[in-house]
Image 1 (cartoon, rainbow, N blue to C red):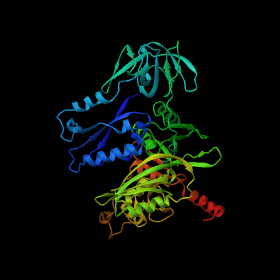
Image 2 (image 1 turned 135 degrees about the vertical axis):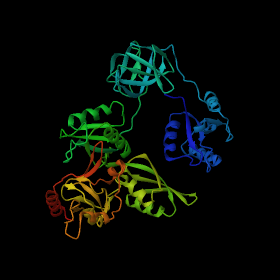
Image 3 (image 1 turned 90 degrees about the vertical axis):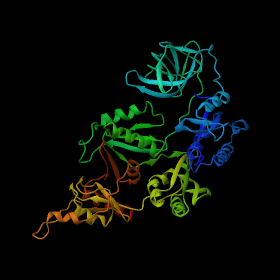
Image 4 (image 1 turned 180 degrees about the vertical axis):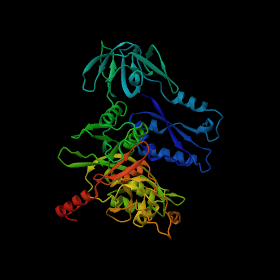
Length: 519
């Protein structure tokens, strides 16, 4: 939809991995970029170094001579200041002038037959699905008859009932728009991204948009824990199915499939973060459900070879912890592509690693770097299988019986590993209450009470000191999951649980598996 871009770079941190990704996309489309070096007021700002690093990035990504000859604006966005040098003016006018000077006007033909490419979808509570895009040719009016050209070339007759244009962050309803305008149309219920809206008398399609395929999937299912229905507003399979398929209207990289079970759905996305955002959004809306451990999506090459997704991993950490990071990524089949001393005791490394090895890696990475490491990943592509790997070294502490946790019982369980919950918390059999310090799962009784005597009173528990429990975020909980575990998600809590809650049944299946496959 655009004819040029502003590349925003921090005056101290310089180009980040995500900078590389968005700039690569812009350069591939032939766009001219204006580099905006922001936050020049920071004490550690080095605008000249950042400018050199940005220029090197342009060259590395294959920019043309014209693209590499980019204008530079320095800015302090929070104060609304900008300038052609680090000495800023008290206005953003230099930035606006640079945009008008260097970004070309849209190349359009207002007198040609209508052509508009649908680039984004939205949703209006009153008027349904909205299609957003730029008019490449012609004009459009509200209630005008349109030819909708689908991805397979099929042409359907449509009409746009409502027409909006944009002013700042607001949408304004209008009666007419011309070539070069970015507009939003309502009243086209089945429309998809990449389709063309054209003049019925001359229906010519524009080049379609390719949406990259998902690389990771999870199973979303109806909550089957003993606490089901207590904390959520929506929890039936019908509620869950409607919400997931509604998400497909605007979340174009998402895929939802029905499974053999009416209570489970296979949801595929572009990574753990993509699916994690969906889970968090649904939780806040009042949905209650359970999800499985993420797994990668494999592809088959033309010659039948099985391929798996790989990611480019950029890491910045201290020189003291880089050794542990290198060891962990090596165990996860990562290949080091570059290592640089970033100064001030910081090291930067670049790896190509299988997505399978990065599932559950972020939390271990933060632990090993004492929370000071920075990691960003970018999808790299599909390649041959990297081989077997063991991504999780520890087991779980599992509640032996239902009840309410006590300080006395938690103190005994604490000797086995780190706890996820504190005293006074309701638990059920099969619920994961902590992480075992060693490999293998252990069932623990976290609800046991101390027997009272004439000497010991109930107040004796006040003297027991527990280590504060590890409160997991949604991302950490998803990363922690083992293959035989599920995450129960409600508006009020996240609970990790075993797929099979009954301890005896779980033990029988484990014994049977060992007899069949060995240790």
